[in-house]
Length: 318
Image (cartoon, rainbow, N blue to C red):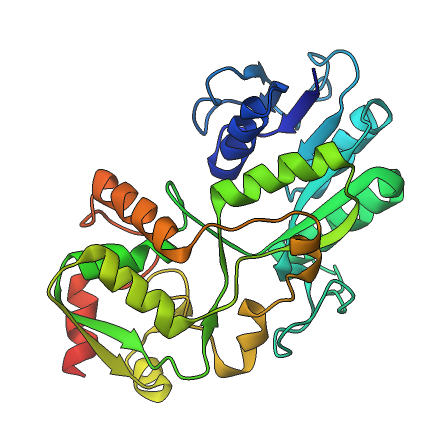
């Protein structure tokens, strides 16, 4: 039986990886403080603070794969120091945010990375984590450069904003979509591939991204899934920005809307991912899953991304 250790494993993607590993028949251990939620049923939780000197003392034996989810340089370094010699394969979950440029569509894994001058920034920290991992375990390390992760339980509220908003009906502010794309990968598709790639011994950097789709198609799928009486109102970039709407994520934003000069961010090459066995379910299926989750959590709840109804009314009023 394969032994898989997940450094994390109680939050969204980590829990999905644990569930996928368990479904594959593996023995799964998660090292975490246990404050972000419960581990997947069947996994073993070893409670530890990774900032402590004895953080890894509760782990015994060797591992077929270690999955590192953190972007904290101290955690990444200490994990490698304590466990790399006991791991047949090492998986670092990185991000497409490591790339220095976002203006070139279909850039692959050879594209230039940011210079990690400030590791308090997410992009810099992920590059540094990759460097640490390569230096310690390059011959057996997979660097998963994940794109936009979507699906049930998404804590960022980006993708789910759209089916939830259309589900509420009324006039819905949307960006002009001509020339814009989205590239979301379902969390369970990503998790299952990570487990398969570890078992296959896949190494090197891989852009683990969703299928490139026109943003118009994503918004249409969200509206269709909701089935509500909603009227999209498209506003151009100048109007949205002049009315205080932010790109991509966060308060008073339109999620998935990117500046025109950053369209390469949602059009990364997926050739290596597909070649290594990456599979992605249809958009409509993911959208139905997301909408069901949004309804369970409450489409009217406070959100980390998007416009509130009051903000949307303000934008519409100009």
